[in-house]
Length: 239
Image (tube, rainbow, N blue to C red):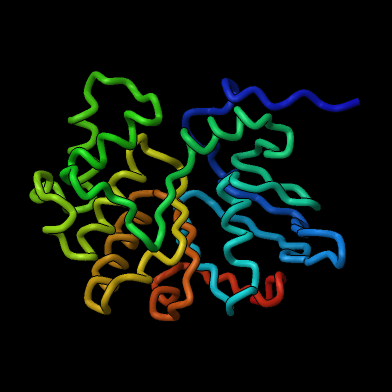
């Protein structure tokens, strides 16, 4: 008998003390069948509130596949994945979407800012598309920009911002709604060394504030800032 999907209304607004934010038990992901490609193999991973974790590995090692599973964009074909004790496999598609919206912020290598909108408008639009409350939207967006040190640039178009500044606006957008977890896919891939170092200092500060960060990167300098480094090779955790 199939167990009913978890009711998202039972998910606590705050993380349960001592409980992992993310818990993977022997998670695997296989694509195709002729022959099957095993992108992930029996991955075990625990990530606790406030952890700053870097996932590193060569191209094709399974980093992006793992990030997609962590972000509820894909499902494992083996093993168990829990977010704050909730078994993601038991959620419907709508519930997984709701889980992403309320618990997870995403940051990518490309900034994905609208060029004809100011920094403030770009952040506000994220909440508008997510169906957030209209009341207080500007104030919440300003607070997010303030958190990443970009409130003074709120009226600037992306073309007037440096790459590092654009990525900070993208992070502010991801932080809107106070997600429990920030997932980043090569967030420094389009940045120079100075902007990269500045962004790492921001990540360090966010982790100290209690935000949980999981960052996929090929940059060992970025990984050096993390509290913990997870190395993937051929879909397996090797360190």
